[in-house]
Length: 390
Ligand code: NAD
Image 1 (cartoon, rainbow, N blue to C red):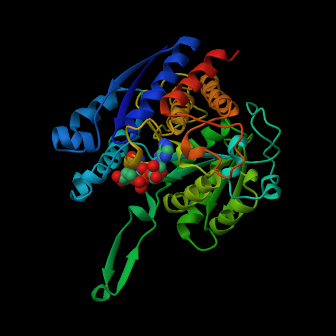
Image 2 (tube, rainbow, N blue to C red):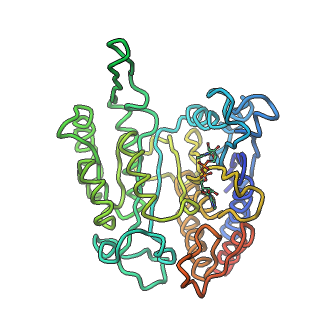
Image 3 (cartoon, rainbow, N blue to C red):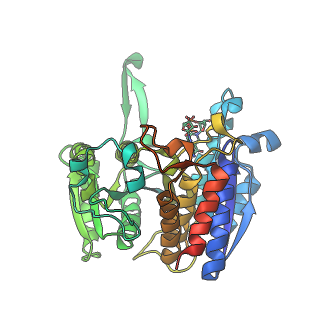
């Protein structure tokens, strides 16, 4: 099957890490009989330099013609003094709006090879029912592998706001429609289908009316997914459970504000920004993700880190978050689960060999078996692990 991928390398380390992800995708194509056609597009600071605008209309139009978009990162100090609507980050907001994505998916998992970077104690990691992924060769019991699905385009960040009382009082409004909630719930259920089939809806329904609507709609929708275990949790409890027994969670679905906070908390548990992938989806997934490219529902896939200007162009950035983002693209936009698992297993295998970029090196002085490698060598290690997989 043929897939077209809009590539937006962006600024800073963006081009370095995206180049490694396409090398990996090419091998996936050869191995599994797919063709990935790339359409390279400009957005962010480089687009400002060349065209005067962070998201040239041609970029958005071309991206709309593709099946999915893989983005590196945008931004850098040279564009920081520009007005807000002309800054590189504006391109991200406009791409999300233009491609109609409204659900942000952020996986957070404990890789046994990076256990040292997780701030949680062993007995905490042993709690919950997670027992390691099938591709995980280590002897670790416990840990966590969860996915936060955050509503991305509604709620208090987009609600009515203002000042009164001569500026001495201020308000922001949390407001959600049934449609906005249902569509993100469907994406969360579809994600749970291809994971461990557990979904926890996080809210503040003991206080907030909008949360009570989320809860009603989740209860109603859960009847369409009887094989998925649906549960509910207040956000304050969830914030606590994430650090007390993260292994209990599979998919967490929640509003924009709660998801913003919880996904950063979960990211901190994994210990490294260079490892974390994300997907932003807009497909009204009905039951599971389709097995072919979903034209009209073009996900945006990107690492959660920024353009890291301090290390740009030095071949030291960690490309794994971008490679793992490409794996999410295979899974969620193209329905290629086997291929996604193969990429994830190859990343694991490279780490098992002791290869580490500088950001994920064990700095405690007991890293005897580690070898520090650059961006390209890490990418090559993933490629060679893919090639040697059965
Ligand atoms: P950052 O994520 O770029 O960097 C934070 C720190 O993490 C830096 O020390 C950096 O060297 C390190 N780091 C980040 N990614 C890494 C990787 N793959 N491998 C190794 N080390 C890595 O955040 P920042 O410094 O706050 O922002 C830099 C620029 O990126 C700013 O212009 C910001 O607006 C932009 N930004 C863009 C995005 C995006 O494109 N989605 C997200 C966040 C920040």
